[in-house]
Length: 155
Image 1 (cartoon, helix red, strand yellow):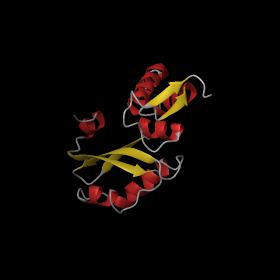
Image 2: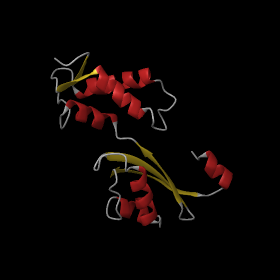
Image 3: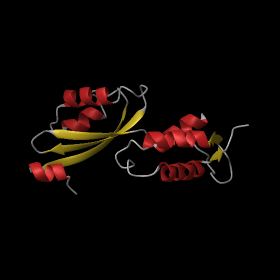
């Protein structure tokens, strides 16, 4: 599937690269270096631009990035906010979810946490047209599958 911009400019696509890079921590070392280097992309340009775009996040926040590489050695990239599971683990204060989700509760979070995560996720390109209610329902479903109980208020 090609983007409208690519069709209009007629740049042949070389690859689509998906990486998870810490916010503000893009360096020419692995995993960024080898992934971009094989397509002869400008590593330093990517690192500077990525670090500039992610400076509002805390360092070491895992950011999903999708890089579209073209055959003329140019590229474009989209940075997505961290995953819902990462936010849920941070809000619940746990390292990992429950090993038996519907039997053992790993932790609890409030509806306020869910709403705040939904507000952040609404800025993602693929969520911008979704209502905060539908994003919240999806987050609650993810929390349930991780063994995190969603409550009205913490006791």
